[in-house]
Length: 530
Image 1 (cartoon, rainbow, N blue to C red):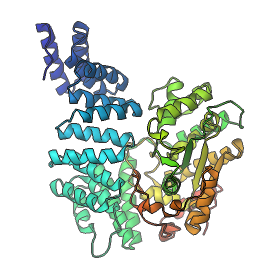
Image 2 (image 1 turned 45 degrees about the vertical axis):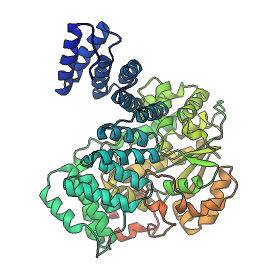
Image 3 (image 1 turned 180 degrees about the horizontal axis):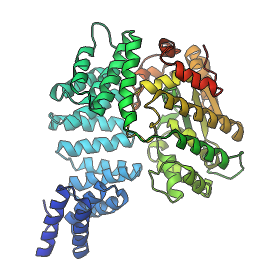
Image 4 (image 1 turned 135 degrees about the horizontal axis):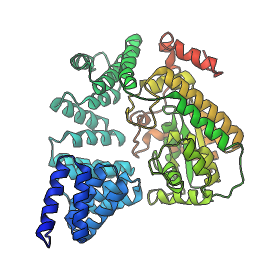
């Protein structure tokens, strides 16, 4: 429906803005739509077009204003409400995005694309059960929409229905064999066996698309995982290496930037301070290198009836960036570190806590499991003096191998180091350097726990964790695999099984291939074990 306009000029501006938008001319589309809303401020369609052009050109806050106005002018339009939720999500306003998505869903959109977009908002807002039901509805309405089917598969994985997820992934592949990401997820979803695996299909596809970087990453990651499951370790490592090399060649990642950031953090936080922060004991931060057991610890603690898992939140980083005058998605660098030092710690803590509402107000404690928050511990300790901080440690060689095995998204700003084994090694050295500093600068604030210790003595480790968090013992925490809550991480399938030891010392299978990494770590003074 097109909102009636009061002039022929307005109709022409709507037409021309729509044509420009469909042609990918975002700036021109925004100029035309802006001219329309200046001419007719109450024209909902004009605001909607301006919002579409703004979001397409990465101006999320501008889009929020236009979509909000459109939705207020015509509250019956589900597409207006859906786009408002998406824009709020893009602007990192997750609480508002969740509320807007709920409102949009109440308008009963019957279009699978709109429902798919709402499902993605729910995922970003950590409302995974609602995402699952929304994606289910989208697939019912549009069974040929592979975007919705793949996201349904992911939601099924997050919520523990592995068999149904596998079926959806196979459907995606049957309809579009070049859906590379689906192949990678299918390999990860269970342990492959000699009788049931996808190696022949993966090899044929890899041969057919040798120059496609995305195909190379996902197909060879899948082949590495499946060969490893079959105990074929030299072949597995070769595939992991091939998977990562294509993405690394296309990257401009520079190790020196990580070292400079750690230098800036060490200089900015030479010692603990008595700056008054926001006095709440609700947050429990779980940090560490990715793939070190952070999800396992999250599941143990969140199995307690007084603890809620909020997922991997970006909220603290966003609150710091906004209060420091930077964009919400600004990456931490030396400049932001300096600007952040001028931010009032109590205001930062209050802003962070408020940004997690309403999801985190359900129980006395909530868990923020964003591994890379280890970079923010100086700010976290000042802003939230009563927050608990848990850092997971794992054998350095296993840590680096696990990062090397994982097919991280090359566009992820958090994992740019993860596409070359020695890059990972250098990043690990910086992690160790920074954590050594935090232990000195923030005495008594960080509870460190080894993954291997949890595996060797689950009950003792669980009791220590709960005691540190100020939670009474509860037997549910010994049976975290029964925790029905969603888990939106690379470990989403593993956490539904009891603790296993097969990932301990996994690097021994690759001693020869990982010798250069071992040499790098040892030369940097890091104990790697035998």
